[in-house]
Image 1: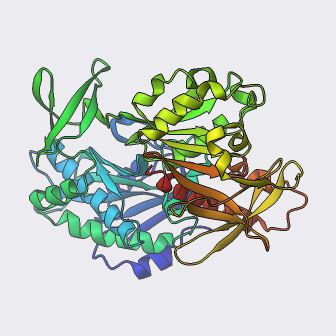
Image 2: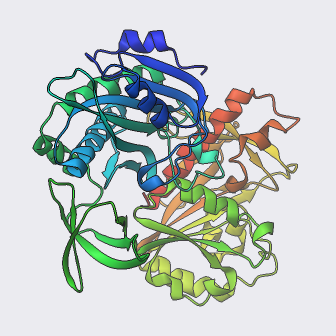
Image 3: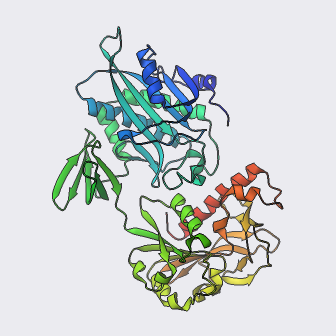
Length: 492
C-alpha cells in the first residue's frame, strides 16, 4: 500500500494532542528509543514516531517483537505524565488505555472477537494482534507545571501484513487483513482513530479502564490456566479468580490463593481439547505438515491444542479421550495401510460426538466415508487448477485452487447434509460436504485442499491466467473455506 501518508493521518486525526506531531521513518532500530530522544529534545506531548520497519524492536520484559513487515503500525508516543508515586500501576494503566484504544479502533472495522490478554496484548482466537509497552524515563519536562514526567508508550499493530503465510509468525499472530479476509484497511484512518481513543482513555479513571479491560479480558474468573514463574521457570496449573484494579491477577492453585503482577509471571490458557493431524512416519513426504500449519493458523489456539497423531497410533484409540477433531489428508503410506484396523476406533469416536475431516483420496480408503462418493473425476495434471464455488451468505464466490490427482465428486445422502462448496462447471458436482455420523460429524473434501495455500506456488502454474493479486486473494478465500469447514464440525 506504500508509505504511511503523514498529511492524510493528520487531516483525519480528531485528537487534541495525541498524534498531532508525527515523525516518520522508513526504518529504524526501535521507535521507543527514537521517541525517548525526541522527548529529551523537547517534543510536545503526544508526538508520534512511526516506522515501517524496526530492526531492534522490543516488547514487555525485554522480549523481542517482530517488526520487520511493512504495512503495519509501529508507533511510539511521547507522553508528558504527571509524576506519581505509583510507578508500576501508573505504567500499566497507560498500557491498558492503549490496548482498549486499539481494540475500539479495530471494532470500528467490524472485527468484534478481540480480547485483551493480561497483561498487555490483544488476541484474536489465541493469536496476537497487537502489543503495548510503556517505559518511564528518569527525566522531568523542563518548565512544566505541575512537574511532568517523560514516558514513552509503544504500540505495535499487525495491520495489512499476511502473517498467516509467514513461516515465523503463523502460529503466533494474526492481522487485521487476515481477519477481514484479505481486505486491506487505511492505516492512516486506523491510526487517527487510535489517537483519538487513546487520548480519551488517558483521561479516564483507573476504575473506568479496569471495568472495560475486564469486559474484554481473555482470563475470565473460573478459567483454567497455566502460570509460569519467570524467576525459576516453573509452571503450575491454576484457576483464575479475578484481575484487581491494581492490575494484579489473583488465582487459586492446590496450595491456595496467590496474587501476582506481570513482572515475574506469565499466564496462558490451560487447554484440554485437541485437534489431531494424522501423519505417517515420513513427515516430509505427506501433507500433514501443511495441514498442521493451516490449523494452527485458523483454529482458536486458546481453546485447542493442535498435535500430530501417528498413523500407527490411530488404531490404538488412546487419543479419543481429549480429541475434538481428527484430520486425515494425503499420507504417503495410505495405499499400503490397512484402514480396517482403525475403522471401529474411528466409528466409536464419531458415535460419541467426535469430528472427522477427510481430504482427497482418503475418502475412498475409509469405509465410513464411502457413502460420500458419487464418482471420481477425470485425471488432472499435477499442480493444475480446480475451480471451486464457495457458498456464501452474501452470494457465491468463485475461485481457483491448486489440485493434484483425481478430484472426488461427492453426493447428498441425507437432508441433514451440509454442502460447503461445489466444483465449478455445468454439473455443479459437490466438492465439500459435512454429514452426521451418530452424535458426531464427518466432513469430506474431494480434492487436496492442503496443498493450495501458498500463492507463490500458484504463481508458478504455467496454465494459470490469474493475476498475482487474484492468486493472493485466493488464499484468503481458502482461509474462509477452511473456517467454514471447521465451523460445520463445531470447531472454532
